[in-house]
Image (cartoon, rainbow, N blue to C red):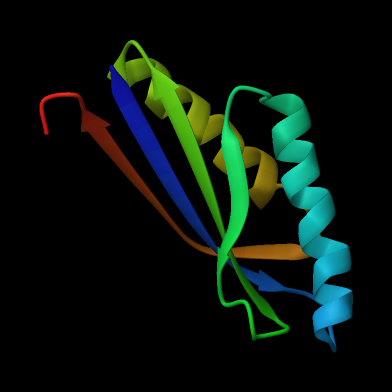
Length: 98
């Protein structure tokens, strides 16, 4: 068993409040979950900053290759949104022997 963890650090576009931030981040999380129903996805950081967001995505799979493929597809999906600039993406894969 392999567990993949993807952390996306995002800069949000024309956002001036935490309420506006929620209006941008929630649809992104919903779209990732809709396109990849087997992954766990949540806002995990920069909770008090209105122009920054961190999204965490977790994948469980039988192979490391499948974990990587799903995480890369999730990253492309989020990075393709015009209202978001992807500042960084970190992928980590853990196996059941760690």
